[in-house]
Length: 240
Figure (cartoon, rainbow, N blue to C red):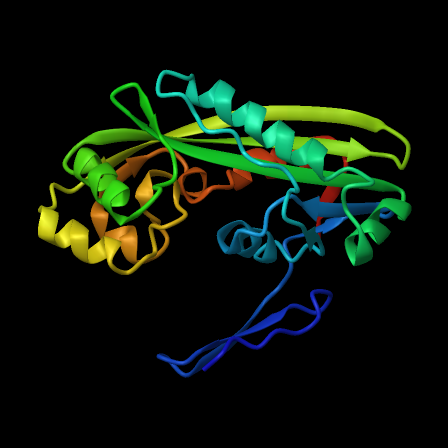
């Protein structure tokens, strides 16, 4: 049964088909008056995490080509640069149509993020094909790796960027020692096609992971603890 949703002001109605239970998920945060939010990403994973807060926002795909990491790049520095590139690419006049209306509402917050997986000092980007994805997973299998996600937050007042913050978080991920046949079966699902490190911890790829040290949301691609702290400390959101 699909999830039903009410207006965020009254909460969301969640229907659990397996349990036959209906419950209401109330909003957690709201934007302060005169502030709008743009997520510089169309990632379903990042959108879902913001949806869970109950905050109204517009999502836009950054109109910029992302640079490829060099194997010995520092993951935190690289992802901060890419997140900043994404965020600034979504300033006017880059965004048009309905999303552009947000910029006339007072202050507009633009949030962008970038994630990489690194192992043995080498950054693993997104796989170029199934063979590349399998090789990445073989390399990760049975090993400890790092996932770094950086955020860039811009506050735009309609004329210029008033405030900017770029910060990073890293989690350590431990893989089960899966065999090549199991990893090949996962690659065949195509879930890994556009994922950093060729897996998605929140999807079918969850079985790959033995444990993590750090924030789960960092591994997914949006460190919500960091983001909430930045937005709250700047008076851009408040608890409902």
